[in-house]
Image (tube, rainbow, N blue to C red; front, side):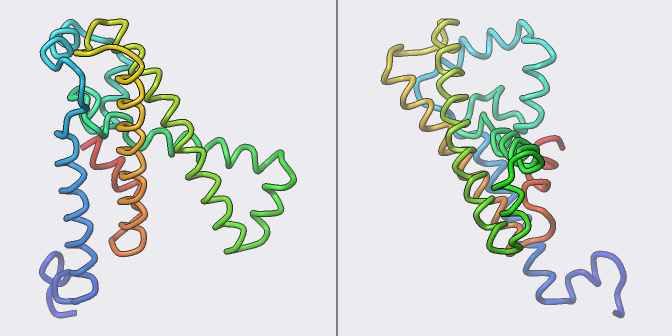
Length: 188
């Protein structure tokens, strides 16, 4: 290759296409951080966060790229997926059916991925409901009630599913492991 560094990177059409796609996905992810979850009183939330929530909130906020602080549709981030992935890996060490799936190669990997996705949806719904309940208990909701909890749970779960999907798109059409790229974008 004639050019080194970034110049050389953009001389290879396929590599250029993958890098630009990854950058585009990161832009979409960062823009999604600013799409607010409906029904939350943002002024009260900002006031509460200004008083300091503690290290756990700060850590979750960091991994979500600031989405928790903004309480955006991406507030859960990719954490439900990571938690379920770890759980599935640990369960595969002790459950014979999952061990057998791992040994089946590509077919088994696809089934385990399906289980991980379904588990992610379930965990995100639970997290979303718990967060909505907490928001209500703190008086941060414009119209409290079951409808708010349902809409918030669904909104946050949809945000997590979308992040999971864009991570998979980076795996297929971009550069690097998509989930890792999203985590890195959140931290940076």
